Image: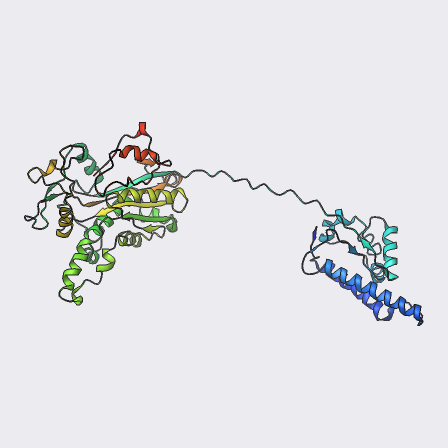
Amino acid sequence: MAFSTAASPLCTWLIAACLSSSVAGLSGNDAPVSSGPLGRRLRRRVARSKQLAAESWFSSFGMQSASLSGQSLVAFCGSGLSELGTFCNLEGCEEYNNMKPLFGDGFFGEGLGGFGFGTKPARAGRRLRRAAAGKATAVAVQPAKESEQKKNKKTATKQRRVVVTGMGVVSCHGHDKDMFYENLLAGKSGISEIERFDCKDFPTRFAGEIKSFSTDGWVAGKFARRMDKFMLYLLTAGKKAVMDAGITEEVMKDFDKSKCGVLIGSAMGGMQVFHDAIEALSISYRKMNPFCVPFATTNMGSAMLAMDLGWMGPNYSISTACATSNFCIISAANHIIRGEADVMLSGGSDAAIIPIGLGGFVACRALSQRNDDPTKASRPWDKNRDGFVMGEGAGVLLLEELDHAKARGAEIYAEFLGGSVTCDAYHMTEPHPDVVTILVMKRDTFLVRDRCWCATLH
């Protein structure tokens, strides 16, 4: 049983009074003893008994809690407490009231005259008289029954659900989500001949190129002149998603900005900015754009968008080729599910239709060469397919925790049910022949063979 020190001023004062009375006996206030051999032995015995009593007192009621299990508590000694009790009538402090089950109601008694560790005054008086005569008495203290500890039951937490409340797009099908969707439903192709640069010497001369694009109202002019197009697409699509979700500056004032994040990736990053820096370096490093390094990295788009919005939650990018946006959406949703964020902008952006980008894919023989019919060149399910078609643009979803979205009355487009990440470990560009089986092998995936209604390949 652990017995802690008495903390109240009253208990401290009583302890001091008891010890001062005992020490007074050692200094000559006790009854005189004969000076013969028997007297000297008696004095030594009395002094030793009082010393043991004092040491036992300090060891039991010191600054640190002491264990009394298997030990004894030495009774208080000296007649000073009885005299103190007759001088003033005192009542027990809070600590005493808490210790009543241990020592009984006779601890203070009527004043301090009945001071003792028993419940009967006569028994307490005998102990005090023996202590005053120099005989230490041990009193066993029974350990108190400890209260039952609370069971550490793992409370079931409510699964956080993720919904889509905003969408933004910049593409060859249009820069408005409604126009984009209508063109898809109508089967309209956005593939056309490349007009941005002269590509007559390339075996592939078509792509999903964005013909008209303006950053007015979305990106500041000084940045629009310096940034790579992948960042301009990203900033525009991201802000469109925020606007589509009904998040105005007034609404955003009620958001916890530390739980609002941006996770928009890019497969290629700022290829044009980096290419221009290499050309400038061939003349002199003084000709290089001072922003060429930060504006070429894939994470800077998410960082710039977060700075514009003031969002201080999770912020980074993922680059996993054509699967970049899917990875970003899964990771962003997991941040919300784990409670690390309430709102996340997620998606992808790329602008690789430049000479170095087109030439790189041509060199590895990955692009279709159907220049005579570019609108029908992308045919992933055709046995006569001859490659994929390059494209550019940005697509961003605003993911939000369900209760957070309901609280502000947001329109909900869809719910994110889950996702998983796999690798077929087969080929750099060709998919595994049994790719659907590989997908459903993932145990934590939400895909089930009889519910898998869509699969996209490139």
